[in-house]
Length: 206
Image (cartoon, rainbow, N blue to C red; front, side, top):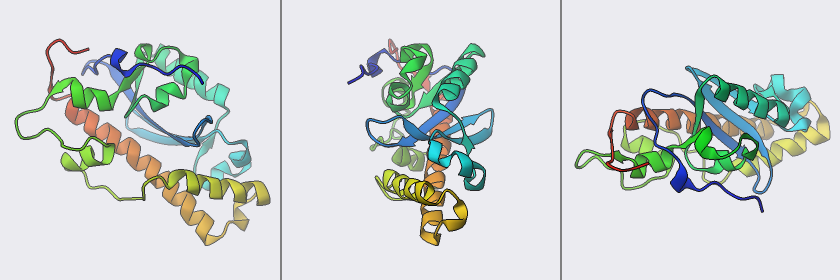
């Protein structure tokens, strides 16, 4: 098993830094299958699944090899952007970029441990959707732990038929829900981080 990044070493987010917001979907112990990325107000979704390459345009995503993806993120780092995710998951899945503290920030740790919440405003639940709702964002529930099931279903159709013309309404609906789920996660991430950046940092936190 690959070593994981220590969240305790992850630095605090600062207002003066430039960020992009990142969320992966995929299977346990595998490379991610889908990425949602928000940078400078522009949201994009990518797939790294070769079975989806010929279907990517019809499915509303961009196909990218994993190597090209890592190069893209490395280039963003060279442009002084830092990645933000809501755990260490995205950093741990992209170990090619090196230690997380050099290129990645953990918004969960930032909000829960690194900023001062005014009295009576601190969230009681710390999953991303609960924090976003606590802060006033309207969200849609897509079902817990259904992303991988939806992804597996669509990949089976893609491998079998090689065209979206053969997708059933159920397959199309599962794909749409998967993309919407990923997009909402990225938008919630951006929303809660923007709120957190307005709070004061805790004393002696890192």
